[in-house]
Image (tube, rainbow, N blue to C red; front, top):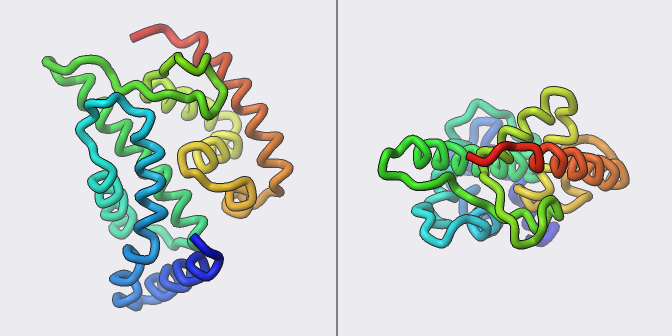
Length: 191
């Protein structure tokens, strides 16, 4: 997405927040490719027979976002909330699958991009979600930075803007959060 497209998305969000219903109709086409990239990145690490498709995840997340009572500040904030929403949808899906008597195992995701486990090791999305929730109880900023950068695909600069810190702080916080998560997930009992 170009900087012009980012500004357009921000202007549409602000117009929508100001009551312009037509801006909402223009918003999805303006952010669809970026939302699809988020969804694709989230689903790429899922098991091959995952029932959610990229398009379905985008549309489910978008519907939740426009129905939410959130005053989006700009495109980066919108994308950050979209990433969190997609993660919650996948967690809800994993929980439902786990409850299903015929259901098999929980959704597994690869975190080689985060360098947490060995590249061929896969983690349960529910274990990761619970670990991020535990991290958030004592350091919500680190948890948010992990979510925005790795799940939301935001750059260091975009993550820094969304959280209100410098890119250097994002780098430092990510390194500390990854180390904590690595220890935490190594100590998670297998389900």
